[in-house]
Image (cartoon, rainbow, N blue to C red; front, side, top):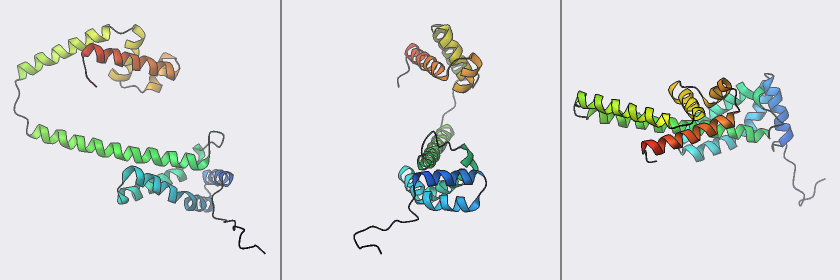
Length: 196
């Protein structure tokens, strides 16, 4: 018999390794294991998402998306890379930040559309001259970059490749490509006189 001073062990209390085992079973399609994972992580996921979004309705929607992602992508969890709860909360944080960014982009698009609706007609010849002048400035500034920087910037920003794709195409480490791009963009910014 347990004394009043001894705390009871709660079977519903999440433990690290057990959650990892459950995720492994979820990866195999085990619905009961997912139910247990859901019970353990849904509260922390919703709490984290609410802190990022601050909108209860959107928070619930994003939390559900995260839990669906856990069900679909449980096989991607690697216990040797970290704890299960950390993996789930990372998914939640990324999804919440994506939602914030999408909302900001939508607001910006609406703002630009509103501005365009009220923009007076422009002088086409002046616009063409300014556009040509800008292109010449960009070409001149690209010419001031090192060959390696210019190649990386061109692939990433003119051909639309991701940093990882640029690294694969140039057979270079991803970190090297990121450094080249960062340095190249800083030099372009300085050359073009763009203020940040």
